[in-house]
Length: 249
Image (cartoon, rainbow, N blue to C red; front, side, top):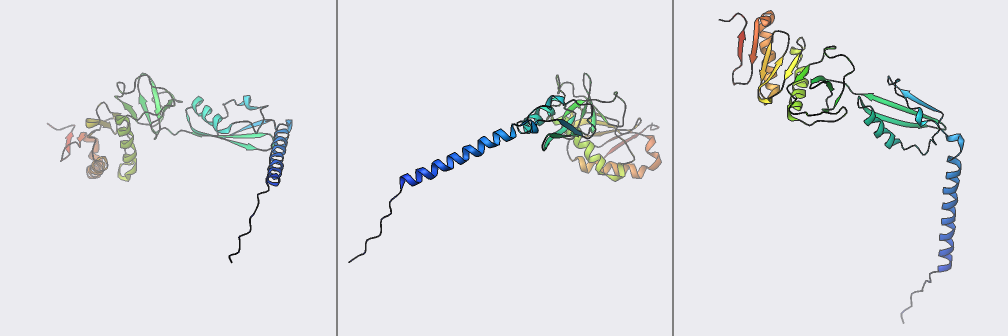
């Protein structure tokens, strides 16, 4: 004769009681948290700006409850309000202090449009802090038709601008070219971009095989030595580089 398996009855009353107790505990914890964190003890009394962004006024955060400040939202708003900074982070330091760090954008070139803009390696345009012509940055020209009514703090994924920035990055990577400086990049057409390495030397380069062409350029510069001052332009758009001298007949 087979044994019958014992039957287990679900004690609905006990489960309901346990659920009610857990709900009550959760409510008491939530209520206690709301009461404690809402105390004046947690009101922001100081906002500390870390770094060189001391001219920024964040006094509006004072008096706020430190737990109710939406750090991510404030970070996004401050990034939009101050586009010259690449990243803004806010940190709580209990009980009543906020720390704010500003990571400044590093310009890699000036873009000449209706007015000058800085541009960083992420293709973000932002306002110029110096007078145009100051500093030692290359000037990118020829983008007026591509960047209409540009906004500070906005990223522009424009092929011609990307090409110019790639050109600058690859140029700086080659040690043999470190003695030269890019003065200007004319980028109306990436296929025949002109680069001025100095006040006297012009380099024309196509949009393909940038690294290889810059290696060729570095070899020509090294071979020329001091005679590089006598070179009017170098054209790298063809299979063989074309070199024209100032005193050539």
